[in-house]
Length: 513
Image (cartoon, rainbow, N blue to C red):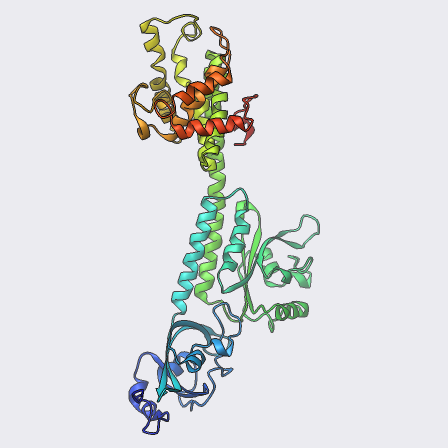
């Protein structure tokens, strides 16, 4: 038999006398006692103060009293079975840290973490004891942190597949508190209208022509149009009853939207408004508003960052192009060789599953790997027949010379490292430093294989091309000793799949990988 609960009398009935004494009203945590039907028998002073209820509130109301109107984290009405008190009454099991949104006065709502336990007698649930604490600020801070983290991720590391502004809308509605996010820009077709450029969530709410930024039109005096026209953030706390167009109020009610924030911003220098909707009214606290304003500032900063990166990449492409032309003027055969090596190197890198940015860098590294040969007289580079020991050592100096030139240009990794290491071999037999195995960076191991394939298949002034079959036989024989076996296998797969050198345009000319 269960031990009698201290809140039960000798007959197993709830005894609320203890709740009528002064000591519970001195407790800093909100405490509520409900009977088996969910009626509130007692709510201490802290609880009443938190919810803005009268000091002499007699209790006896349902936990679904319209004065508190419980809602889920996403703002939707809470089903009776989902309320932590009712769940405990139904199952007899305690609940912990269940977040419930409660009204705390006219037009205000805050978020509380509920912990409940059952009051039982002889195996029967007689009621529930619930304590709850205000976690609104913590919840808002966590939401802001999640959004800021997500915004920084897709702005600083953008994807080619999805626009960062579409990512922003999707990130916002992934938080349960927000039902709709859309970004409006000036229409390119209809004067004064605002068109949705990006959106996520309950996008059916948006319809063509519903918003303008004209001061002379009624459709221009909603939150989005006003924010666009004035450059000031707009907040509507109650969409269903606010002073908006009747058609907007009807749509807000039909789609279950309660409040809205419209934030003007200028991503990439273009005027726009980010409109964010919640499912319940009076949801936009000062803390939440500040957090969202910080989000749009991050977006503006991110777009400025992307613009600067593009400028730097353009400058980098120009630098690489200029360096490539240096070898072309010195030795046209070497210049064409580098382009083809870069092309095959990129194909091998893709076959190995490297990420796109690294594939691009492998290509660029291949297109500059023999830059150091500008220090070698062309008559030595293209001379038929055997070279003297001194001439051979001169040619072997080109990796170090190229790496030195490229390192002075402050180019990204691994361009100068590939120039230095592309003649190193897995067994340590290469040059200039006799590196072994993984001491040779992967991009250099890739270019080493592509270098040999290209050199053997192409004609030179001092010998005809030896053919693709012989080139593949050579690198296959050296797999595991001279060459990385995984790189060799990927090279063979690429060629068997139909790779050809063709014209092999430069990455900075074609803009493709």
